Amino acid sequence: MDPAASATAAGRHATVRRQAAEGRQERTAEPARHDRGTTGIVDGADVVAGGWAVDPFVYQAREHGLAGDGITNDQPALQQLVDRLGAAYANDHQPRTIYCPSGVYSIRDEGTVWRSGVSLIGAGPAATRFALSNPGNVTSPTPLAYFTALQHGASRDNHLADCTFARFEIDGTGVILPEYNVLAKGLGLQYVLRGRFHDLYIHDTPASGFGCDFLQDTFVDHLLVTHCGRLENYEWMGGAGLGIGIGGWGTSERLTISACTTVRNGTNGIFFELQQLDWTPPSGIRVIGCHSEGNRFGISDWGADGLVVAACTMIANHQAGYDVSSLGTTAIAGRGGIVTSCVIEDNVWDGVAVGNTPGPYTFVDNRISRNGRYGYWQHNLAGGAQVPAANVVIECNEFWDNALDGVLIDTSLSDSSVTDNRVRNNGRRAEPRSSGGGRTVSYTALSLVDTAADWLPDGHRGEWITAGGQQAIVMGNSATTLTLAPARPGATTAWPEGTPPPGAPYRLPDSPAVRAGITLAAPTYRPTIHTNRIWDSQPHQTQTHGLRITNSGTCESGRVYDNDLEGNGVAPVLFDTAPAGGHWYHNFGLDKSP
Image 1 (cartoon, helix red, strand yellow):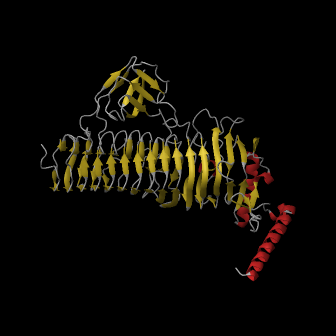
Image 2 (cartoon, helix red, strand yellow):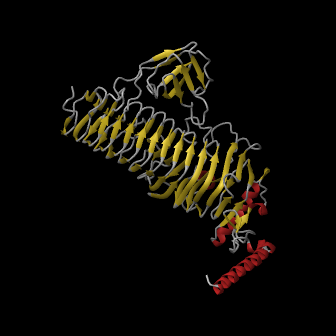
Image 3 (tube, one colour):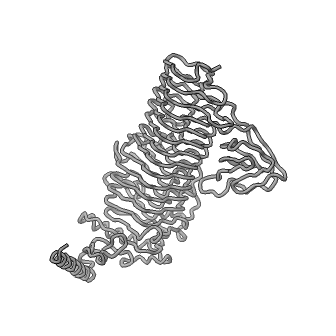
């Protein structure tokens, strides 16, 4: 830059700083008349210091009654400020922001009813913490912020608009309730338009950490939500990390959830639940690059249409990594979804569990491995739709090292496609029944050791062990050690009644004799099964057959061709029911089957 240009730029910046300083003095002297804040903030820094004009619509919390000292109850001051700024937004449609600098803000005994046009920004999750508690009102759920249809008349016509929540922590450990309360969330907002939720750490709330419904044109990103839903007892189906009700805006709810991490929450890491039976399942929802670990379910679709889940990891969840079923409020499962490029492994039961859906649904390019039962389980739960699922696509996935079948079709399918998958080394649960006790046996909170044992590695994966009058689930095993799953999400022990004493006798059940790569155990109409490679490459083979049709299963009018079924432990195929009709050709190994 030449000297003249430099001098001009310096003069311009000096003028901006002088005008900003003058404007700040004027607003400080006359805050009531201007209804403005006193400090402009960008990412927690005074914007004047950076050479920018002060934002007159940013309010520093400590200059408006909040102490942030961890002692003073800041909820009344927060509510007063939210109401004031919400009224101003209703008057001039200019959004305002509350900035809470570093500190602990105690929110006690009441939740804060939120208003449109009001945003809440902190200095960072480790710096700005909202500590929720209810010592003076032991029945109050005390969310940080809520606005609901039942309590506040939220609706399409009475919604929250233009609100951002960013860069702070919500700590729910102080909320003690006699029983589960669905309102005991970190954030519980309904009917949100143009919402932004960014860089939040939410933990230890009695109900869902982020329990917000009907989010239109909204983005949720970079949330860490851990050990929420701690009062959920498997009866309410609430208590998620991110629990999102859908359907309130109609057939399209444009919502993107990205780069969020959910760990050890009571039910789901992330779930979507259709809220009324007569509503149309909405489309427009995407989950991208998220991680769900140690929840009851990783990610669940209980009523969306065309949910897109991409590049996510779902590991060590207790029931399933990915779930489609009728478990939601309306007993309506999702349909039309796409799950792609995900890692779904080490889940205590199943990798993917799909049921009660009319279809279609697509699973493509996923790794589904090391799960405690099935890699993929097609099933129907009682109480939901029992129609055959149509046009399910299972394509280009890796199914390996699962405890039982790689793919089990356990309820009717029509016009499904199972193509280009690699299905190998499944059926790891191959050990016969076992028992022991006495001086060679010892226990810890999450393991059993029997120095006299000589188990096949992971040969008991997914089994229920009985010891000391209690049961626990085996996650995996070495020759002498069983690794056990926690009794429930968030638990630190597998034993709800205490660790069994040394030497306590134990029993492990027998394993099933047949553990196939792909099993059809229900009527299957017009399936396309082609170009799959199904084999076992282990020295001690555990996947007994490539393709099995059970006594309860059928394969009618199928197109089954170009599959490689050679190299399984017992035989390429096992047909308790013979295929009926269709076209079968170029299936390597099938012609040599006994």
